[in-house]
Image (tube, rainbow, N blue to C red; front, top):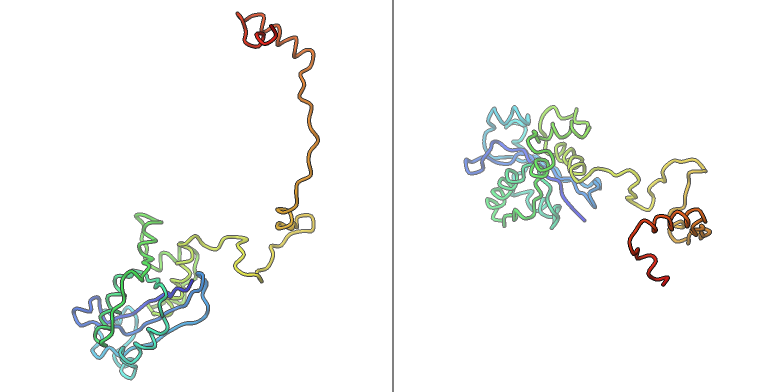
Amino acid sequence: MREIVLDTETTGLDPASGHRIVEIGCVELINHVPTGANFHEYINPERDMPQEAFAVHGLSEEFLADKPRFAEIAGDFLSFIGDAQLVIHNAGFDMKFINAELVLANMEPLPMSRAIDTVAMARKKFPGSRVNLDVLCRRFGIDNTARTKHGALLDAELLAEVYLELLGGRQPGLMLGADAPAPACGPAERVDTAASRSRPAAPRPLRPHAPSAEELAAHEAFLDTLKDPLWRRGRE
């Protein structure tokens, strides 16, 4: 199963107000495991950089001036994500910006059905708690000390770890591949589980169940206290 964990940085909060994407980062997962294949681009937004946005991601108008425009990288971006499911923290925000950029580039927008929203996942798992990326990293013990500012690729890498934890985390002893190491144990503890499942169990000797003479006498004494007991009808 192929999934793409995706994050963007922008000049503001709403593409309808003229704001644009300035960075996009993607991390490929196969069966929820990062493959090492990434997509990352800084993008010239063709506009100024508001101070509020610069304080969040530190990408200045000068730094982005010689970077490609979204239309120039859109083909590579679409080729990288292919038809994979997209994993996004607050998917509505990023998908809104991506689709606005695709429309400006005369390309078809992406359907929202392709996006898995990890904010919604986290709110369901931790109702009433804060669910921003930093909080979730601390909750799951994920090292985010390199995140001094928002960055699309770093945030996508952190989100890939958060996503795995939201799915249930790494299960001890879960065999993720044929070459996964066996758990450490002593000779007396080592068990061939496949063989033990297929090997028939040795039959146990039957235990005696016949009542003793004392038990039979006690039973008869009890029956004497009853009126027409069922247990004696078959003897007549």
